[in-house]
Length: 233
Image 1 (cartoon, one colour):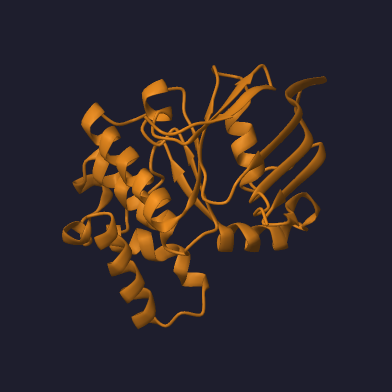
Image 2 (cartoon, helix red, strand yellow):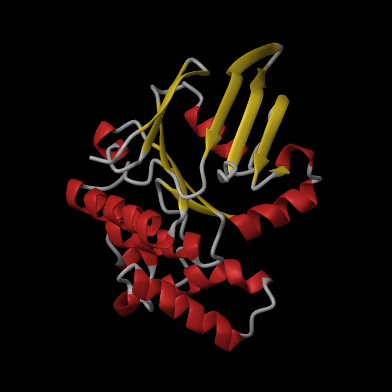
């Protein structure tokens, strides 16, 4: 019996208002993403790839169409339920890390757990484990300003992992990094996919970064050009 896709997008349309104009961003997108896949969303600036990522992550809503994640149509959830769903099921990795500058690496990673029922001891155990996983255990007391870009992104990855999410979404995660740091982050995402079976959707304009993924999805002017599974290079 085949496993149903983790993400099933059917005829999704999205536009934005700009003054009195309606600007189309995504046009009739239909796409499936399997459990345990690592997908790179590629396309030129303005192609709609970040908008599509935000829809999948429940940050934004489509104008029409169906978007199921784990069999749940997230477009039908009320705002409060959608926020709860995001917190439980989605881990976010951003280009510019989005770490709180006044918090240590440990505290930044712990932050998503503060709304859970875990005890302080349980939170600390989990944070220490995840920081060790991303090779930042020896920097857990450092503040973001004391870390390199690559180290900050590893902390951001740990924060994305801390709730054991169903889905990891990454928006240009290597865009602000030098070549060596970028390679390190991509290798880490590959390990999370290969070893832990995490489903990862990554927006990138960089063909080298996309080479770390198992599948490529190309967008052009809001339309899906192709989605081609392949073995990573």
